[in-house]
Length: 198
Length: 257
Image (cartoon, rainbow over all chains, first blue to last red; front, side, top):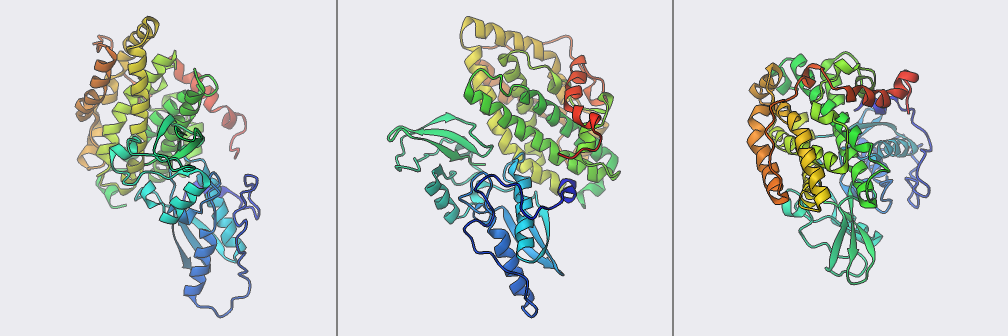
C-alpha cells in the first residue's frame, strides 16, 4: 500500500463527482448485527460491498466489471481489498481506493485497501458484462488481446456503440481520460469514446 | 523481495531514482504545453502523456523510497531534493522549444524507454516487471504519437522541415548520454533486473531510423555530446523547472493536497 493512501483521513462521504455516489441505486448493506454469521459469509459481504464501487470517470461500470478489484480477504476483523490501477497515471486510482474504503466501512467492516501492481492489469480483464455496460453507456469497449500490437494501435475494427456501424474514424488518440480515445461514426456521424486497449 | 537480494539496496535505489527522475522531469516538461498546444487534440494529448509519465515516476519513487528504507515517500523524494540530487538524463530536462523540438525530444526518450521497459518485462524484480508491463504499452502510444508528428513536420512545409531539422541538430548532443553504462547499470544487468542501456542503442536506432527515413531527415553526428545528468550535473534549465515543480512544498513544507 502506498504511503499516500495511509495518510488520507477516510471520509464517510467522499468528495465524489456529482451524481457518482458509490452506492447510488444499489442496495446498502447493513453490516451492524452479524454476531453469528460465518467468516465466509462475512468475506462475501465485504466483497459485494467493495464490488459495488463504480469507476468515478465511467459510473456505468463497477470496479468488478473492470476487473480492477483483485479480491477481498478478511484478516481478523479487517476487510482487505486488493485493487489494481488501470493506467499507471490514472488519477481515479486514489478516488477508487477511497470509495472502496468508504463502501467497506458503510457495510460495517474495518477497511484496508492494498494496491497491487504485478501482474499488470490489461483491458482483457474487463468482464463481458462490463463490455456490454460500456457499450450501452456509449463507449466502444476495447479490442481483445491487448498483447497484440494491432489491437493496441486500434487497427482492429472499432464499431459505433450507438448504431453498430463498423465505419468509424479515429479523431484523436487521446480523449477525455487516459484510458479513452476519441472516434467518430461515419454512418450516424456521432462522436464517441473508445476505451483504449492496453 | 528475493530478486533484490542479488543486488545492493543502494544500487537499486540509485537505478530507480534515475528512472523516476527521467519520467518526472520529462513529464513535467510535457505538462507545460497544457493550454498552449497548437490544437485541441494536442492539448488533450500532451497532458495525457504527461499523466502516463508522471504516473510511472510515482510508482518508481514509491518503490525507491521503500528500497532505500529511510522513510521517504514519493512526495519527499520528488519535492524536497536539490537540483544536484536529481539524476535524470539531460534529454529529459531540455526546454520545450517549439512543437517540433518537443515532439523530437519525446520520440528520442520514448525510443530509449521502450526497449528498456521491454527488457524489464522479464526482470527478476517482480515489482519492476509489473511496472514495466504497463509502461511498455503506454510508451508504444507515445512513440506512435511523436513519430507521426516527426514525419508530418519533417516531411511537411519548408518552415516545418526547417524547424524539425533544427530540432534534430539541437537534441543530437543529448542522445549518447541515454546509453551510458556505469557501475549502477552494470549491477542491474548482472542481477537480471534491467538491461544495460549500452545494449539498447540498436533497438533505439531501429525505432528512430525508419521514422527519420520517412520524414526525410538525416541523423546528425555530434562532436559535442553532453553528459553529467546521472551524476547530478545539470543544465541551467533544470533549476527553473524545479523552482516551479517544488514551489508548494518549499512554501508550505509537508502540505498534503
